[in-house]
Image (cartoon, rainbow, N blue to C red):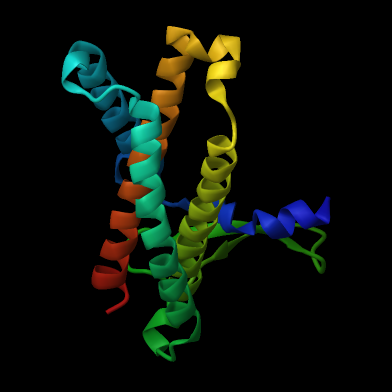
Length: 190
C-alpha cells in the first residue's frame, strides 16, 4: 500500500526521536501534556456538567472545525516558508537534543539513525500539523453527514463521553503542538 505511505507521510514526525530523557523530550508535548489536559477537562465536564451547554460534542466539534480551518493554512504557509527559505542555520542540527529518524541504507543493507537538520525537523513538524488538520476536517465533515440520533448505541452515556474525550483530546493535542510549532519558529529558527 504505497499510496497510504504517501498520503500519511505527514505523520512521520511522530517517528522522530531525541537523545533526551522523556521529561525533556517532545513526547511530553505530543502525548503527556495533552492527556493531562484532556483528563482535567473531562473531570471538569463530569463534575460541573450543568455549567456546560447541552450537546457539547457538536458544539465543540463546530468550534474546533473553525479553528482547524484557520490553522491549516498557517501551518502550510510555515511549511512552505521553511522548506524554501535560504538560510545556512536551517541546514544545521537543532541546538539541544539531537533529533533523528530511522532510515534504510541500501549500501549497508540495514537501518541507521539519520540526524535531522532544523529544516528537516521543522518541516516534519508543520507537515504533521497540516496532515492532522486535514484529516480532522475530513472526519468532521463526514461525521456531520451522519444522523447520530438514528443510531441506537450513540445515545449511550459511555459513547457520549468517549466522543467528548476524543474531541477534547484532539483539541488539546492540536493546540499544544501548534503552540510548540510557534515556539519552534520563534526560538529555534530565528
